[in-house]
Amino acid sequence: MRPLESDFISTVSHELRTPLSSIAGALGLVAAGATGRLNSETEKLLGIALANTKRLIALINDLLEIDKVQAGKLRMKIASHSLRDVAKSAIDEISPLGQAKGVKMMLNCESTGDSAHVDSQRLAQVFRNLLSNAIKFSPPGESVRINISTGADCHRVDFIDNGPGVPEEFRQRLYDKFSQADSAGKHGVGGTGLGLAISREIVHRLNGRLRFTPNPEGGAIFTVELPAA
Image (cartoon, rainbow, N blue to C red; front, side):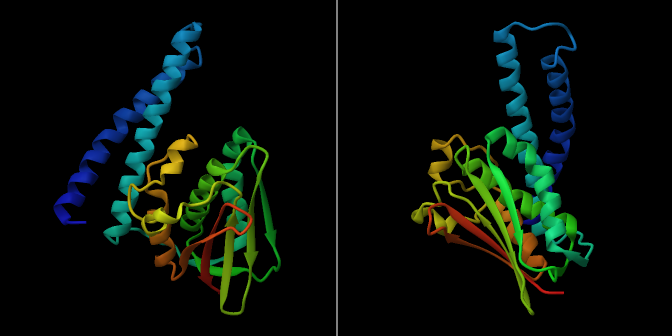
């Protein structure tokens, strides 16, 4: 990203985030009945407005995040952390999305020797992105599995779902900014198209690798590989 383009995105994003947050807060209060009881039509319209405002805020946050990552301004606090603990933290934070969709999350770790030198907050952000995608594409009643495999030199965390999978023609653009597969629209899945791009950059800066493989049982497997501590 060119410096001028980066500065423009950063300035515009910062200027938009505060008023949009105020709008979302006000809409949320009205929708909750703070100004009185609403009829069903008004409640529906407010819900649409609030949802779209939140989508804009998410887009702005992701734009600022990818800008920081690509500009090398992303600060990392590296220490030894258990991957199981980071995964549990991510699962706790994303659990409301799973409950709303009727999708369970199952964590399996075969060993306690799962420490890696990482920024736990940034890695949890990656895990939340991957879990969010897996949940959004999973049919209700399905499960998303998180398997942690440990090794002497490298640890692996697999995020496995049984959704529609990633279309073969889209796989080369999987980590491109703002890219989303056609199947996303068909399944009513929203998003900014920046989550995977951000996640790959974070994992790369942790000296790891993020990769995709098709799930033989149907669906997708996203794998985070990190050097063992």
